[in-house]
Image (cartoon, rainbow, N blue to C red; front, top):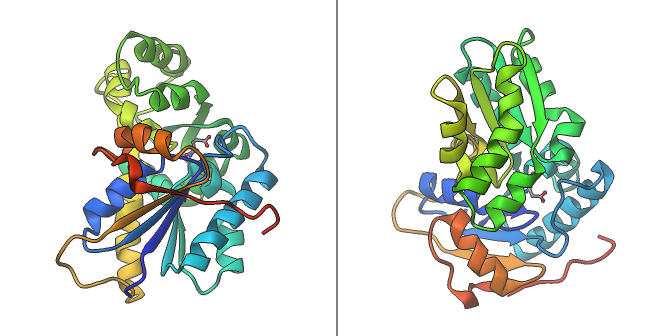
Length: 273
Ligand code: DGL
């Protein structure tokens, strides 16, 4: 009960998930690992992402965690089963299934669009998860890798971001009946949500997998009896595999609060975990 909840991502983007987890479970301590040395995961093959995810999880487990949240959508699309098996009985939760079930709850027409990295979209894991819940859903999947760079640059709005949003999303809205729900299937996309909402218009609901994952984590970890009693504000420790200073600077955009430059500890991942 007194150990932190481990959270990992390929970099700083997963801080959007950490923020949602802290809002939902303020009393908990968190240990966050950003694998900044090997970002992006979104362009890599599934087997590489699984291997990286295992190494990240092993490092967090060695430090002592009571549960693991995979904040990275790309890793959540390929690795949760492997991690749950390897680190059992550690509870392992990814962002993909909570995002998929939130999308199924949100849609009225049954037409859901997913945006994410190439890796997340290529494997079709979101579409499979949605179809498992609603077999007649019409799912359109679209890789939007440029959004990752825009978010990392802190360009959450403005003309360049709006132009990129139009370039990706206008065809989605124009080719055939438009979706009524869009899943932000990447850690970096929640910070772009206002611009995406403006480009898509009011007929499309945005589903943010960060908030729904926090809700799922609260429910699942509570039922396992591993949560602290509510009250007080827990601590957060940050680990990164490279660029602690950049992590602190860019991370503030995603966490929604400034990270002091000395807050991030550099760690090395074993090459063959
Ligand atoms: N964290 C990744 C995701 O949510 C985005 C960044 C990357 O490609 O590593 O898919």
